[in-house]
Length: 177
Image (cartoon, rainbow, N blue to C red; front, side, top):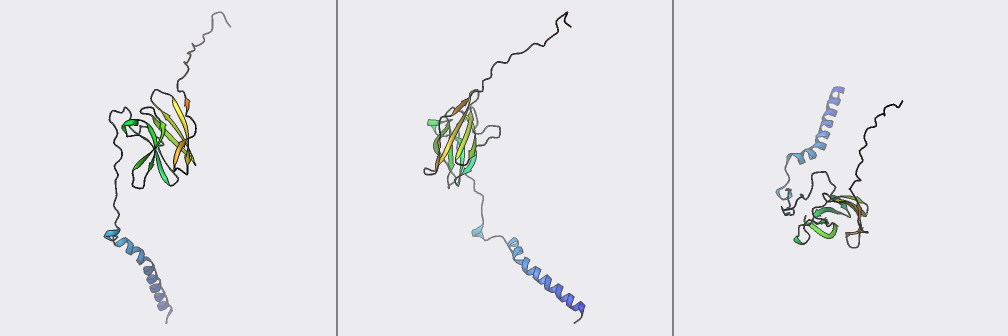
């Protein structure tokens, strides 16, 4: 056997090895999955809100209303029921993709909006209503009950400002100098 024949045989073996390794990968790309294994996109209908509300459920600014904790998604949402319309509650996403109202009120002022900041088992929520004070509330996650509970009363932070005093520009008086 000559050196040229040996090199030619080695290149055929390498080519066969590469094809043998890549063929299973290429097979998965070339053939679509079986009909029973096909996945389809699914959409879920959300809440219907009363159009008489002055504020949409999510306002125009970026707001943190959704978080993940204890293997569940949670959200600050307006209650859709007539008894508490406009209240902001903590909701939990269920396995069937529906939202369950935990009954934990974040803000009972009509059309309030809020931002949530989760920190381990604690949840801080800052809420406001147009033309009103800002409220900061703290909630704790209860493992036994699988939900949040308020830990104390909300703290109110006023957004009213003291009247500003306009200073007149100082002008040097005549004869000074």
